[in-house]
Image (cartoon, rainbow, N blue to C red; front, side, top):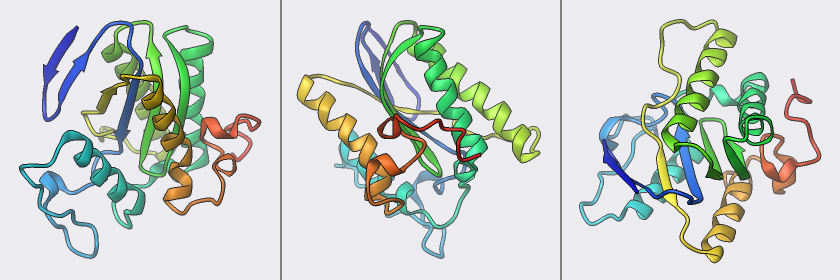
Length: 196
């Protein structure tokens, strides 16, 4: 098992399934401080668990009125989906079980077949370069450096996380049913570039 810490602890057992979330750079104020105009986050509690912190931040991302929302751009969201599917179907880097591309963050449930860090560097690096090209931005960060990762511990948890991911656009008020969101594993019958 690999372990390392940056802002978050990361336990990475081999042959595991992971729930990973990453977000756009600047999508939340630094260190949970308030930023005014409804963009701030409440002060963090020292007693807050990693799971509670994740739920609080994900809730804030779903309702954010400020900060970047570049993943609303169909070309960018579609390209993120294409690259996740390519990592599964063509490259065989992982088995992809569920995913969603939200306006300012991404959730994925998958089983890596190569080092998780290598997968995330590839997904985030490639999508950042392509998105910045589409947005005509150069030399600027697209994704937040660190991602949240959680090792799935049971079949029950696997099902709960898969439902959470696919229902995220519904709970965020973006659509009424999961299959209506085109950049999600719930929309299996749709091509992510159909909306481009």
